[in-house]
Length: 86
Image 1 (cartoon, rainbow, N blue to C red):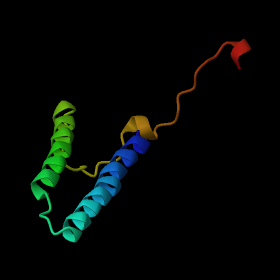
Image 2 (image 1 turned 180 degrees about the vertical axis):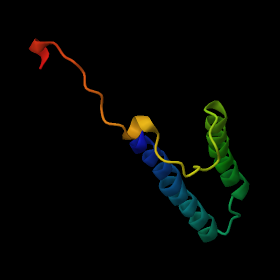
Image 3 (image 1 turned 30 degrees about the vertical axis):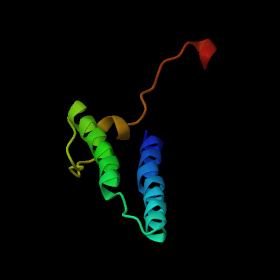
């Protein structure tokens, strides 16, 4: 799950930023207005998707600082397996 979140963040922070930089450079070089409204629209779509996830799963806007959930830190339960599976 963490890998997926890192991949998504990378797609936004690195790839989209790189595309925006390229677009701005192109516009400057060709003396045309940078389509900031279009760029803002793309960011808005991402923000709406993030907001929808927060709504769907009842998530706060930022972590509360609480400790990790018990299921993440408790030792793995011992499972009694049949003799032939050990």
